Image (cartoon, rainbow, N blue to C red; front, side, top):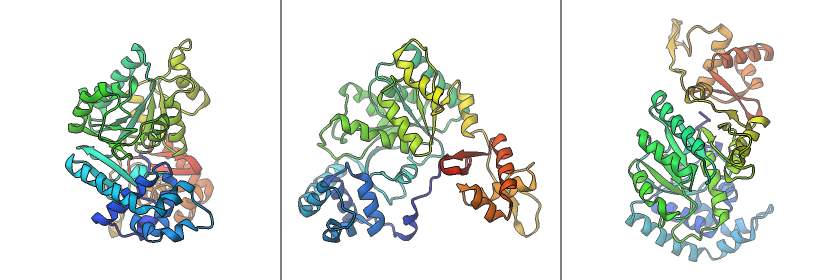
Length: 392
């Protein structure tokens, strides 16, 4: 799965879980949650939401500038803090967890994204940092073919991997069916909402949402009373893409919302898979184009998906019989392969040059070792020429 370590600045930040820090973070979200990348950058600079508010006059005069809406909100921060009190009281009354960017329960995959929200509101039972997480997206106008392919995939996936968190957006069509089929198979499933937890949209999905709270959950960056508009749904897509190891698109028009989620997932360096569809149907144009252009891997079965993801590979260290307690990660590897695999197990996601330096191997030897490891299904190349050890 993608790296689930926190951004670099976390190593220098002491976790703050006080009510005051939560209040400050919620207040910043109330000021403007459309500028997540700005808030996260400031959070990395000052170390906490409380510090951002304390240094707000300095923030407002930063030489590289901040959006005018952020500056205006910081000038009237007392109003935001007052609204944040109401949001937190609503959360306590309705058993809603407030997850801050630096909290252990915050989705770590999402935290690694540059535009991760400072605050998430969550109601549910599922662990958001499970070892295997997939997002399912697609058209609201799905066909019987699309629903059948999705249902079969989730059923077969459950037989191969009983512990997978299924994420989608609780919208009409593919989204809600992904949730329903996951529940049928006994999977936890989480819906990412484009509004606060004081409502469910569409209202016709309230029943399945109630089931999800008991066997998964509902997640959002929006406070109660948040106005719903089309841009909220587009912003919601980055959470759907960033929270998972892979995004699966079932059916989509060439300009469908699912295509935007795929674009985001590709930008985050996540795997994207697409079901092929009939060439004559508009709802298959998006998936077919993704496969044709190499932006998505063709998805033919759960078995092929599991293999592509490396989820069928055990990555537990095994003794190599070396003295001094040293061990190699895998059996039946060459010395060079073992060196590279052991390095990535200890410190994942490195470039060829970094591996070469750390292992005292030539770039050519490293490249050959990575090639054979990839053929064995143990490593995968990610964006930026970074290599990732699967299931580490």
